[in-house]
Length: 535
Image 1 (cartoon, rainbow, N blue to C red):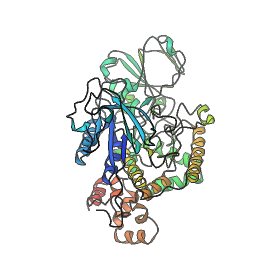
Image 2: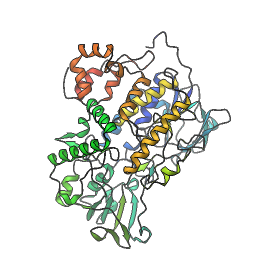
Image 3: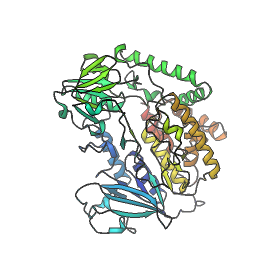
Image 4: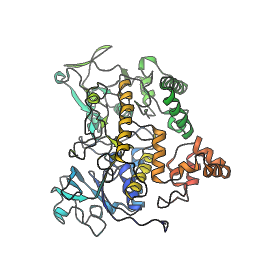
């Protein structure tokens, strides 16, 4: 229930682009406080890449994933989320966004086409809006394969950072007689039966593909230039150790003594990896990269496959030969090379005035570590500098949490509160200054190595998001009277929030600012359960 002091917002029409984890949370949170929000998704299902598909131009998880939860579990959860909150009827599935630009009316024009060859039936409830305003007004009731342009008061882009495959320029590729693809196009191991395959990379996708090929390919190689942060410690994910208190201490140490923080954290990670695994130095898994350069790799089987020789570790590829590759270990004849070298946010759908990477900084693009990663000028990693009241993004920048669900939920709550007029953004000059400071931070990080995403100070960023969302976290876990009183009455729970598993249930625990998201009565029990405890 909203407080009587909170005026209901008008019902601006909002387009949510992408219905993966971030887009689903955004669509739900925007509609929850009264926006007329509609979601667009190029696939014929919600959940984005978590449902396997056979299209080589579409990123998806593998058909079988070697970790728990499986991709099927995640896809099923996301579907149930959409059904539980009744948002499927506000989703336009099978629609591909072609262009986002300013219309002459001052609203945002979103041009979209059918992402599939066959038109989607108008009887499909997921293809329609909630009654009053038809979606696809330019061809209402017509064939949905036609291009349509709809106007919206606001647009939230949540297409994710996995749209645009990144393949490094390796000399001799044109002369190579074998197969070269990006991991986006890898769908089934049977396509490489009996072949000698090199997988390039050491992240989640690279290790998943390498393990998936074992038993089908003749031999699998894993070529990488850096070590890896394996995210399992004594049978549980290492991110369970990334508590709120440890994150605050590590961030403060990094801000004061960055070289010392990097040294201590990297050595701690190596020590934890060696306690769990018998690491062969020839695998090249150490030293590990900085956390800002790698989110870590989660795979149950890659060490076993390296141990039994099903996967052979190689240094980075120096160049292609007509029949294989050349590394620091010499020439190797192979039949196929799969680049699992990451993807990036795709800005090609944006017009000049809506593209957040404009203006371009020449020094950034010219830096060899930029590796085609553009810098987005987004206030607090979300709001377009020129159009903060109507254009926002989730995905181009690194989140505050290792959990995508936490990032998506809190970020979209904050955006919804700002657009509802319940939390004011600062003047444009202050937002520009924040972006300039963030650019300097990222350029400094860029000089140290490649960045998968641009970064923020995660402790300050999460604090700002909680203020904007009105979650009550800052007040109840802060040093004020509210915090001390809550700690005295809830010391066990407070310790779990500070030193236990970071779970998004915390953002639903408190009665926050009037007009913000109401608390969930089951949040406390869910926090105990996430930590393997009972109340």
